Amino acid sequence: MTKRHIIIFFTIVLSLYGLLNFYIYRSGLSAVPDDLSIYYRATFLFLVLAFPLGRILERFFLSPLSSFLVWVGSFWLAGMVYLLFASIMVDVVRLANAIIPFLPTLDEQARFIVGETIGLIVFLVVVAGHLNAVHPRTKKLQLTIPKNGHGVKSVRIAVASDIHLGTIVCKARLERIVKKINGLDADLVLLPGDVVDEDIGPVIRQNLGEVLRTIRSRYGVFAVTGNHEYIGGVEAACSYLVEHGITMLRDQSVKVNDSLYIVGREDVSYNRRDRKRKALPELLAGLDEQLPIIMMDHQPFRLNEAEEHGVDVQLSGHTHHGQLWPFNYITQRIYEVSWGYKKKGKTHVYVSSGVGSWGPPVRTGNRPEIIELNIQLA
Image 1 (cartoon, rainbow, N blue to C red):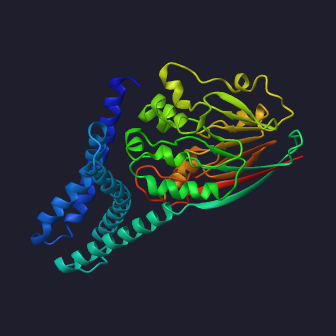
Image 2: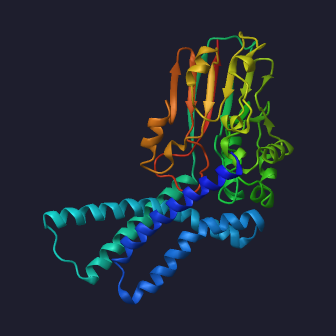
């Protein structure tokens, strides 16, 4: 993307953000008594500005203040979604009542109680979504590949996509993720993209790389790039991960224990820089097709390519399965697989909902997960 395109993109995003918040503000203002309106306005303005101000500060001066603003603003993003839905529902009811009156006239106190009730419900939804987001489950997946692994009969792989390391997915949360991964006693650990959220600065500041070093596996930890590594600076992110024990596969393959191949595709974001990632036939050329081929491709587009070219297992992430309900219905329309398992011909495909979170540290549409992938070789 050119600088001009970036400016246009952020202008559109910020304008939309401002308009939606103004709509929520006006809807809420009607429920606020006059003597409390000044506090409502000040609080609302702070919540709306917290996230963009925090992210701007992170770019130039990482500090507890920038982290605080990002945290507050991130929770507001989730609250904003559900306040928006609530505001729309209230306006629909008002419109219906204007056409066919069926509601009693509400005085100031009644309107305040309605507003407080909506606010409390949204608050509880966000809190429940946060507790869900920070407690990932381990999901077991058993697959059989009819190939000879040179005497190896089975492989246990821990898969953790979309960690999104940064201000929100911080040291304490990463330590819990790593503890779960290490508890699987895996032969391999695979990270299918978006290991880093955006800027590498918060990751360095919290020394998260030293936590990554504690990941245990017999044959190594392998990762691919995701779109978020490109947002924040892909070369800096990849260099940091490599320095801390992660093998980055960027349109590369590696034979592991002489029994299987791990293939890592560059994220499709690479194509936006006047370059093209390797075509899959080129990437697979020269591999021994008698051995299992496990491929990581962050964004689960064109799943038929893996099937057509003899990939045994494709592992992807990216979708978060919408992360916040009801956005999962949108991702289900966009992707052939938004979350879960599908077999296409002889190819096994699994798209993970991810273990971290992007934006708000809240999940209401699904569970975060680490995959315990057990592969039996014939």
